[in-house]
Length: 159
Image (cartoon, rainbow, N blue to C red; front, top):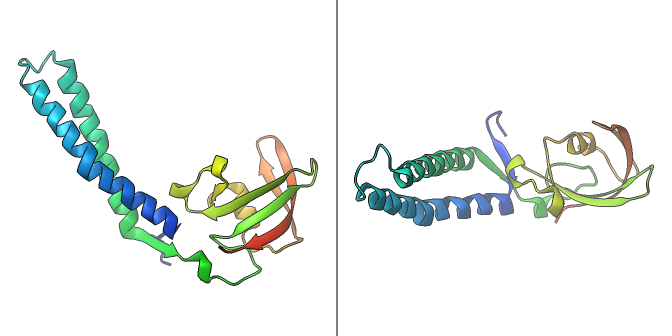
């Protein structure tokens, strides 16, 4: 990977592709129609519908450009081909909080794929950075806004 590459799982890459397709084929044409309809109403200087549609168009075009840029720099990591007991990008990790005995499961993914509620932990997070390079039974300390949290790694799987 070069310094400009953006690591992501195949699932994350496909989600961005789907979002791009929706923006190009559904959202963009809809906002163009909204602009045309608002133009037909006359005076554009006081036409809230027109200004709203133009603002939405700007947001859509920015997001299209952002996604195209990310996809062009994407390095897809096929985690199903990784056979390692060391935590790397794409690993599914089970950890236990040493203080509360609460067990959590996460997959370490790219920033665009992250969804903590779904167990998708961004590689840029303090927890993911602490996990990278570790193995089962290793302990880690993570600096959080609430202080230092200690965890023990219970399992590492690539799926």
